[in-house]
Length: 377
Image (cartoon, rainbow, N blue to C red):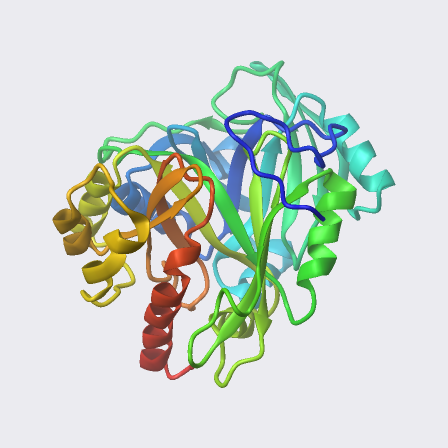
């Protein structure tokens, strides 16, 4: 599949328009303790209380807290009963992303178009109603136990979805400048990358934006392969990673071992001021991967002139890369869970539409240092 670059809202030549997507509606994580997880994401990442569902709202089997910062909406869900899908998911994977929900104009058509192209149905179109209107949702399976839910909410003006009530809290730490989800990365098993890239191309009409092989993403010890799939507007980007042969266990293998299968590796969230955002995250206790100071001795030789002073980027360990469209600034947290699985990327794009290829080696060597500490390299 030919790589296609884009600018703004230009449509990819190869991306099909049978599944128009407006953006990411929400990301739902199945977690062991939703109340405490919500406190963490509010305190550390600046998310705001939005909505709640549980026993008080008539939901008997689970509890969900909805948090939001600008266009990023997280749903944290825990089981209230033994057995069932949520407990099974947590037992197998630990805390992790279950649902990547996509905002569409027609959830019924989205389900029909994807299932007739080969997607396995997660649930058929379902109308949910309350005093604030109605929402139509439908769902399909993707890699591992991850699912996509299509959300049609043009006839709804409630806090989140029917069955949820507004969540008012006296504890509301300030936001930190996170704006939207830039991309979400999936890790899949050996030899499965092309299968899932073809799924996104055939079933959802995505096009391949870029690909990286083990020559691009390798160190002395480990390697991986990656392809980036995008919808027609470029608003939804899903890089798919698989392991590649190396002398030691790669980060992808480590993830799959601890997650017990394929799943979402990291969520990249955009900011307009990465220096302010990362400084605040550090002050709130979020831990980041670190690269050696020597990285900054030659980085400007590679990327050229940038608007920012280098010293604060060096102090915060923020990485820099450039492509034909401009440059980007990025940094990666350590895993935010006890298992070495999911983490976050903070990214600020100054024109660049790429994914930091020039930083791969330094970044993966930093990950390998963490793997050594965990005795999993």
